[in-house]
Length: 262
Image 1 (tube, helix red, strand yellow):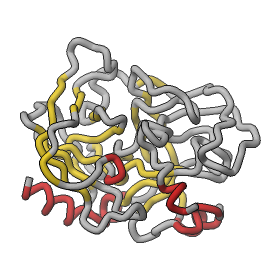
Image 2: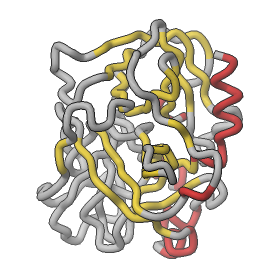
Image 3: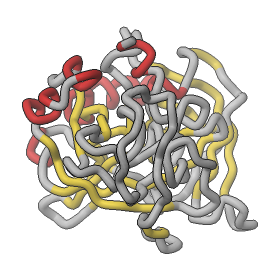
Image 4: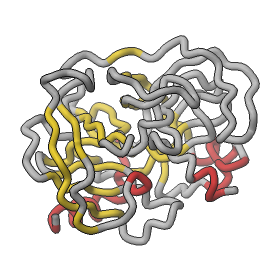
């Protein structure tokens, strides 16, 4: 069952994330069963607000680590090696905009040792540079708390359709102890590799299709810095079921080394 929930990673094929506020009602304990109420929140991002956001053709999100490398989730890709099947779309909040920049992949590097639990990061090498601002990653735990921003083109409600427009939301940090205390799938949280964020009452969360996208906040210089990667959760926006994100600071050195090899 643990592996089943981890398969409820938030990519479009298995369930992607979108920052949605919902009117809470009781729901099934099984992540695959959708009894989600209507979306009543989630706001549209402004054009250019998050220029580092990337939409990937397999139904995941990502961020521009460099002009030629996208950082995403390991569960969004099938392994490492040459890969020309992925298209990265960037530069727009409206995926149907004629101004969208679209670039094919050339290689994929999935986190070494990834087996479905923890280590949920991957890099995608692009065939040509995307000349937009990149998103730096946290290499210290100094920013692994506070209030975070999440964004994506995923579902605006559990089990819902993917979105045309980029949505955004803010979610607060949840301690490892509190997150594990929610029980169920959360009791297996890999505390050294994952961060939880959300509201105890639910209502705001990422969802299917947001997997691989960044969770970020302002650093001491007021610049955006990535602290998490959308990974998994029990449903979307449920009470006592926050989003779980790869802790970027834990893997910063490995990510930098891997990017240098692409």
